[in-house]
Amino acid sequence: MGRLPGERPAGRCLRPAPEAAGRTEREQRACPVRRFGLHPARWIMRPDPVRDAPEMIHELVCTTCEVASGAQGDFDAARDWAFAHTDANPTHLRYFEMAARPWRVVPADGDRP
Image (cartoon, rainbow, N blue to C red; front, side):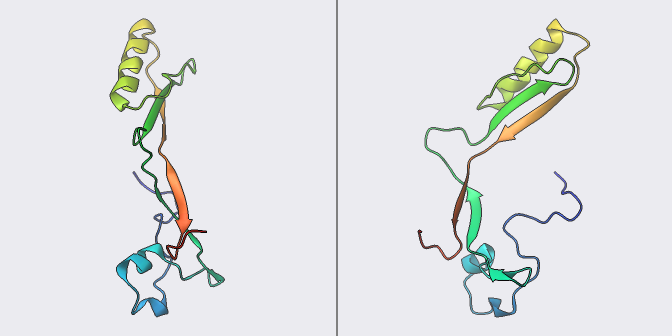
């Protein structure tokens, strides 16, 4: 999926920090260095695998009538709902997908607050 203009990949620094030499790869990925030349980054985000929860939650919304499939832990279930909805309403052909996944904010230095 493409990025919007001016958007940068999550978890990456805008520019390599001069003090990056000597830091571990994990420290460099976390980027606890100066961003925008102001302050060291204190936090990073990463996917949070929640026990007994789906990795992603999908919901399809019909753009014609705004009826939704409801949150599904499996995209195939949401897709099957869209097929059934179109069967019942042949002019309803377009859908938006709403997807969500759990994320967790953690300290950039690895210490717990």
